[in-house]
Length: 494
Ligand code: ZN
Image (cartoon, rainbow, N blue to C red; front, side, top):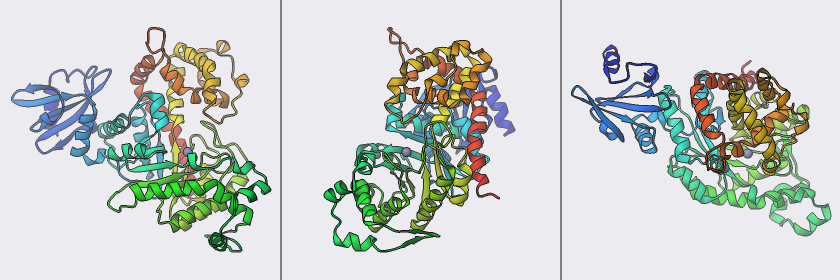
């Protein structure tokens, strides 16, 4: 190592740490080649040294008679890093005891996330984006995957991470994620879930749903036991299950057998039924799980919609006692069928994490996404108050537009007038739910806003600031996401 260090120091430009610093944990050897990442001010680059370095696409240079290359963090170079260093490639993680999804919409959260998961045994899913998020951020799955690969390589995270094609609905979306080596797919069945049924009268339900005899004998006048829970179906329950979930189950079965039933494919399968008008009752959860199981579907995780509200970026809204009661049954059902519960919109649900850890007995998958964006904006409020003020005002102007896509109960009147706030108080907006949701749901508008000359209003300035304050952002994330994990672990680590 000593020899390498002096060799690295002898490379052109690298001796000036202000411009060109080697990330010490990124130094790896493969065959006769050394590969590491250096900070080149506004960007990171790969340096490969020695025999084989020409496999990277970049600018060659020589040090003495040693050939080297400086390579950008492109998809091609990401592919090469993944093939040379397998720890930078995603692995299936839903089948592990516990896992935690981290949607890094901006491609900057990796270092903070890595700090956290060096401390916990939950497996991180560093790559986790929905198609909607890709569209709003103008990113591709290639970029999302590469971003995780390079951070994992750079910061020496070698314990394995997952890649989630999140909330995918169409076969071509699933194929896209699988082609790139994603290790889990979250199938969103919401297009096949009938949301109107919960609002129909009993008579109307009778009119549109006749249950066949074999289904009746399968479910009625029976008690199903799952752990300590007992699930029973009334005829009305059963009709609703069939009406609400019947088509979604058919679709999940089709997708599963097309893409996931081949045992050679090491890809986890999650089904999400959380995007519905009403909560998934325990009986409905049991029905969906049972039908899928009877039809040969092996689930790794399922995301029901829990009772109460899981609004974006704020704590759980609802009766915690009720939540706990139903969570216990949901957890029993999941254990009975051999999968983990997946908790969607899991950002900032601090008042229930301990219960989730407890009743799942530490077997869970929790997804977070928007809170990483909110922490990035908290950073802006701290370090560039003027930029934050501009963005905040812009967000207010776009709020009604953005609200169409989210279920939030934000009251803009409760947000302090930003012109009356001192710079040092701006950060407190991130402790106020309405202000959090304002910034949370307008992220796409903020990132995409352009002036009449087609220049981004905020995006470039934001990325420059996030790069300059990368260390501070990592610390914010470590603290904030760390709090999620602390509480989850408290539930089962006693
Ligand atoms: Zn969801």
